[in-house]
Image 1 (spheres, rainbow over the protein chains, first blue to last red):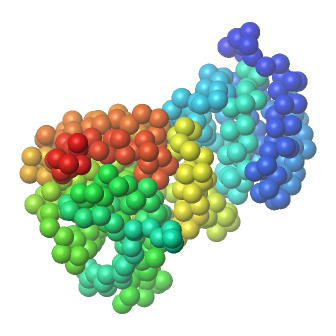
Image 2 (tube, one colour; image 1 turned 180 degrees about the vertical axis):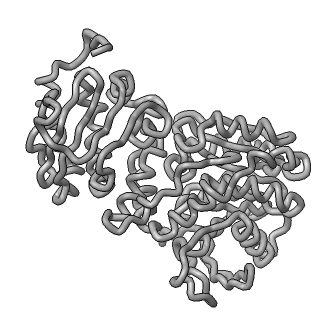
Length: 137
Length: 287
């Protein structure tokens, strides 16, 4: 771990709870997530999470799993600084989405990107939820 | 009283490179023709705010067409287009725009386009400087690589949603949600043309060594770029304008790559500055 979390950082357990609640109660994801079933890694530098979605519901968020603990299909990786940029009500330019941050910041989309594309509508919305639930890094 | 918009739609037949197109366009207003090109993979509803903007239409005849294969403009009428891959080139694209303006008998129109329309505006200033009173490249640049992707048409994904959600981040979070979702919705309708359009945008369009051949005195160039555009950033627009003789660059705050569609109210403020610079606004309109 290279960066130190600021004092205002959301505790990890609390973040997992609020992210799950926000996603499971989000009208858009619930209206369009019937086939939103996949697993993906959110690498936030200081912490990483594997989010497992089943039919639009958060089935599990694994916190800092070991190297071979939990499988996933694709990964969204960025520095803690970039993720903090996502975690504001109105993100600054280039922190306002995974495409923007991938083209212009240090974000990387890795693994089976086809699965990301198949679920792009719901993933896009889910990442935008970070504007209200913030990030734990 | 029926609530009928003053905007009207018509079709015009246009011949380019032995290909015949039946082109749909919307128009409103009178005076200086202002020809508007939508973004790649989209259609002319992106200009819905401008088409009903009383301040602009008072002295401009706003014409927003659907490029062939987009919106209500069909693919070629006289060609088995389904037997080949669609890849738009700068040559064909510019010839089409000039042929459309000829067919509509427009005298010295101003051409404005966004994204791949902004890039073709630069191409028009280079290739046909005497045919246009001015060009307004919106979200354009000398070169814009990286978006000619197979994902837009991948048969294993929902292409409509990939195109629409793939361009979602090109819009600013400050833009009204309803307008962003309208733009998203338009993008679900154009996936079969999007990738071929982007062949022009990211591959065939490259003016990096030709900007000094564009003469902004002969054909004024006023470039507009939004701060949330991750494809052609304000730095890209500024760099491009800096290399064109007498070009002018305007940075647009808190707006993205589809300014006329995602937030016309913000966009119009910058557009009026551009039109003022070109000198096409009448004295009464500016008062």
